[in-house]
Image (cartoon, rainbow, N blue to C red; front, side, top):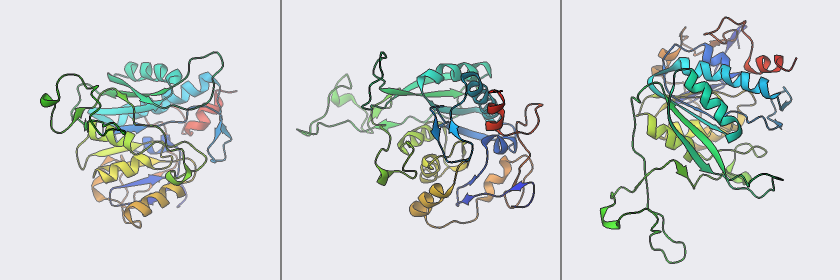
Length: 308
C-alpha cells in the first residue's frame, strides 16, 4: 500500500473489498452512485472481532452516534429510488429507523427474521426475531417480486396449507415473499461459517434483499463485510459489489476463492462510483465523512471519542 492510499484486499470479476473502516470507503464514493446498501453492523454486544480495537462494547450514546455517521453516509451515496437494508437487533432498530427517516429515506418494511436460540433472558420475553429495516430514497426504482416454493410437510410430503385461499389459484412460481421470514436461522456450525467464533448470516438473507431492490449489473455496497455472505450472494446474482471489513479479510478471500476461483482484476464498470477514480481502485486513506465538516477520523475512533 502506497503511503496515504489503500489498495483492495480482495477482488473478483464482480467486486472488491477493502481492509479498512467503512467510512473511509464511503467518503471515497460519489453522491448517489450505489443502487443498494445491505448493512449488518456490529450489535454492540461486547464481541471481539479481532481488529485490534478491543471489544464491540461502546456506551449507548457513542454507539448510536457512530450508527448515525455511517447511516448518513449510506444515504448520501445511494441513488434516488435506491434501497438501504439494515439487519439489526430490535433494541437498536427503532433508533436506526428514525435516523433513516430523518435523513429523507422512505420506510418500506420492518422485516422480522426468525432467529431462535436456546438461552434464557431473565425477566424478558424469549427473543425469537431480528429486524431487517428496508428503506428507499423516495419511490423504489426497482421492486422485484420474490417468490418462495410452497412448503411441504416433512412427514407426509403434502403442502403445508397456511398460505390462505385455494391451491388452484396460487401463482405457479410460488408464494409471495412476506415481511416475516422463518427460514433464516444463522449458520451456527463451523463448517458453514467463514469465521468460526462469530455468528454469520446465511447468504439467503442478503440475496433476497438484493433480488428485491436491484437488477443484474447494478452495484451493491456492504460496509460491514464480516464473513462475506453479501459478496457471495451479489456475485451469484451477477451484481457488482463493494465493501469493507475492519478486521481480517482472509476469511472472505477464502470463501470467494472456494466459491468462484482465484482473484482476478476488479470490473472496470464499477470505477464510476468513485469520486476520484483510480485505475488500480485505490482509495485515499484520509477520506472519511465526506459529507460532514469533521476531521478525517475512522468510524470507530469517532465512536470511542464519545466515551470520553
